[in-house]
Amino acid sequence: MSEPVLSLRDACLTLQGNAGPVDILHDISLEVERGQSVGLIGPSGSGKSSLLMLMGGLERATGGSVRALGHDLTAMNEDALARFRRGNMGVVFQSFHLIPTMTA
Image 1 (tube, rainbow, N blue to C red):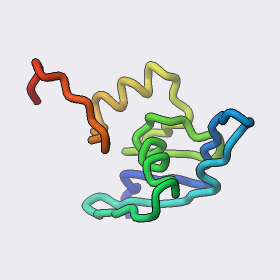
Image 2 (tube, helix red, strand yellow; image 1 turned 180 degrees about the vertical axis):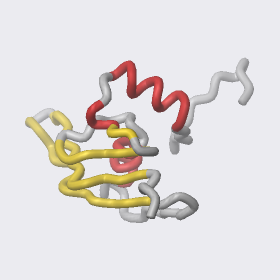
Image 3 (cartoon, rainbow, N blue to C red; image 1 turned 90 degrees about the vertical axis):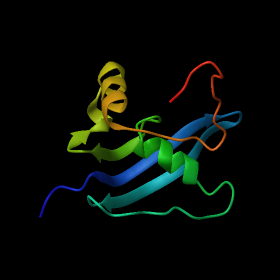
């Protein structure tokens, strides 16, 4: 069996809030195989966007591991992660901000 295109193992995300650290995601494990479609559903504030940011390498896991296309995103430095995202990832944000003078 081939390696999943995306794999999270006990991934955690803790962010700094006004009153101190806030656990956003705790021990998330997930595998996505090539060709598989995945949907994230849940109420507002349940962590869907945070999970997508973690999977896309836009947020750093504070625990566990995140692997994409065979690469350990948690082990990459910022430059390597930026190169990886540029060459392999695409994210359409819910509140996207387009530059009117640029086209896709």
